[in-house]
Image (tube, rainbow, N blue to C red; front, side, top):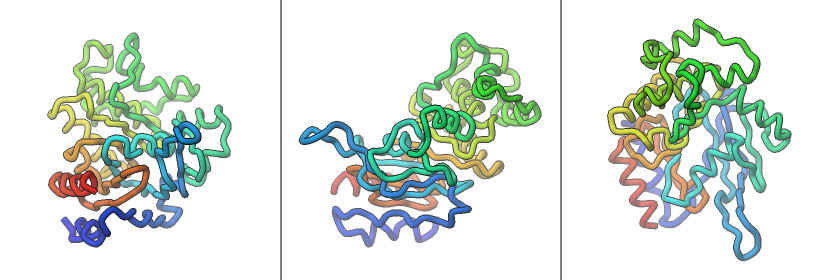
Length: 268
């Protein structure tokens, strides 16, 4: 571990907001936000889920987003991925600003440029594993790259399971199918919302290793939301939120360092 992993919290004034993450060179950024704000409700009943967040996710990097319950971590991912709209500020996938897109354009962007892995797997029960994996490509009317499909499914250990339906697969196997579905279209970013939340420790380790390998071997960009320090330790970088703001981050994290940082944040 590098000494950088412990510097930001050591010099952070108690209760203060961490400086917003500097934006890297545009060519190295897969997605970023500028003063992103999300409010639910109005007047005295309004809830600020995100409070002026500026952050960047580097290409070919694995980022985990963590924070206490209600900190805004899922809202941040949903706004960045075009699953929810911002109240103000801007979000970008590459050079594409999401607020300027129509509903149909947002749908096309999510389908063609992003991959998603959710806690609940989101597989169609009547389709085989292979059909679930190729479903987004089939809906888009595009041709499946069979060589890449074979490589992805082989890497994920699914070659012998492609004819099985979700009910015939374990939870870990179902999530591997979801990972394959996210990877097979060669997306710019894979977003994961608690991707190991429904898995046992062995299956969680398998899925996280798959995501880590996708970054290291394929150059994939991965961003996940998680509450699990062990899951977050697979990332290159952990970003911490509290009260809708970025308050800290760790590079080259360990589970112990993550837990210590979370304890500091929750005690503020």
